[in-house]
Length: 79
View 1: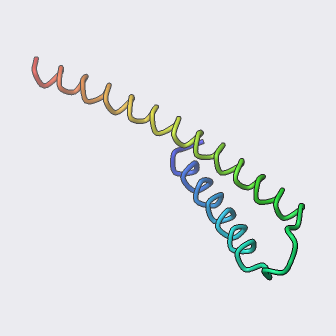
View 2 (view 1 turned 180 degrees about the vertical axis):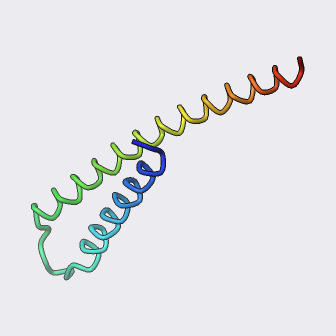
């Protein structure tokens, strides 16, 4: 998966999480907490966390590759 794809997945996950939070916030105050809705929010949060970890891993890998390329380029320019 490319970094762009990972970022898109992360954005979609945040959008889903935001929508779920909005649904919970907009719920009638007298309405009791719906266990299914709460589980859905928990599942969306877990998915968002997984997406974030994956994106963070990919970003770290990309950063390391860029750093290595800069070092190699500097070595070529200095020789």
